[in-house]
Image (tube, rainbow, N blue to C red):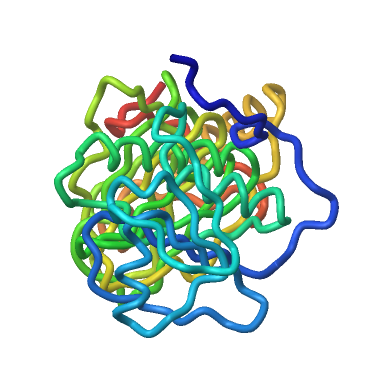
Length: 295
């Protein structure tokens, strides 16, 4: 039997020039407790199948009700229903995101997409985050005491009040130019692969912190109590020649420091952010690899 197929642009660089700054809230049928932020005027609220029951319990009327309704097991009365065949290539959560993207939304809050009985749907939502990120959009998957997002050529920053664990996974075969600053374990211009777990179980340590990646896509997850990042910015692309120049300058600075201040180095309190040799919007470069060894 032929699966339902739809043309879509998630995962590509095609963008609608009239992108809305408003947010799209999508509530699915996974584990759900509450909305930690309330939709504002102009935001789009989509109930993806069983997510309708959660919104009804909260007294929130969705703008759109979408899905194959296998979770809900009935089709509610609603003015705007988008019913899909259960034989399809995408999840109801993904179809909701595609619909919102066509309407010009580029900021997504996804609820009911973690936990529950369907681990495969959780994995599918991680892939959805990846596709949205690679299409230049921002999406947060919220639930089960966690917040998960994907970043591509971006930096996300956290306040010094952040606590607990934070983990990073490469969603591409190889992700390069990775920096983790202000955390218990730092990465300096590191490389992560999708078959290694080097980025798991890092920790906030009471200072401002950030995670960035130049090439590839990272999945980042942290505890929900910390809320969203305080800043999210796109990194400036750096050429190979600029990268080599910055590394050479860093080596020269380190060599001068060693020659002129051999006895004072132990008295200098190390910064949790490493050596700053770049502008705010430029890609960070270092002479160290992921294990702190000189290249």
